[in-house]
Image 1 (cartoon, rainbow, N blue to C red):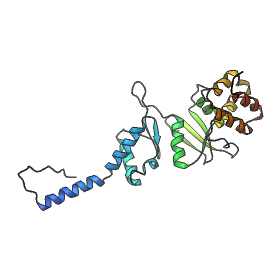
Image 2: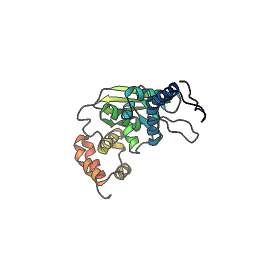
Image 3: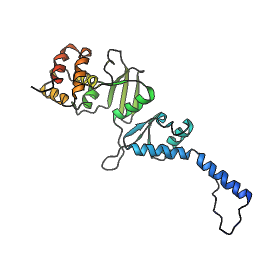
Image 4: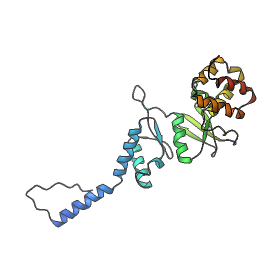
Length: 233
């Protein structure tokens, strides 16, 4: 677009010049860049580590304007495109190098977009609770949506369609506990594990865990009771 240079005070404005200035101002007000500014402001305001989909910004403008704004920002390196329809505002390490997003941040973004439920399982569930320092590059997550694999950098998030029984505790801390203990196995669940899990629960979550014990293997019933005790013995 041709740039408009303001006239000197002693110059007269012609009708054509006034019309051209008016149309230029109108275009600048309505062009997608205004949507881009609002989108970027929200991203930066949320902070680094934020994982998002275009649908989270449709209140700021039309679908085309939002998609175009994110595409430009990704090309400019202000945000990162992780995979189709999924972006992040990368975290930085101490050397200012970009880091891959946390699995939970990716799942939150997908949950908002797809209105499906997710349940951490296996090593990922244990890692969430701090029962394992292992950060698996292949994470399995149960879902009531369709099965598929999402690749985020070196990590693969395997979404596995599960039965209603497996998803009975999805979205609850009790579900993560049950799946983490199942991954550890009965022989590895000792007093130390019980104390660590118990310390993370509120009184309400302890009661909920007791109620959800019916979804756990039989061997886990006594372990859950000990975790849910209000006072350690």
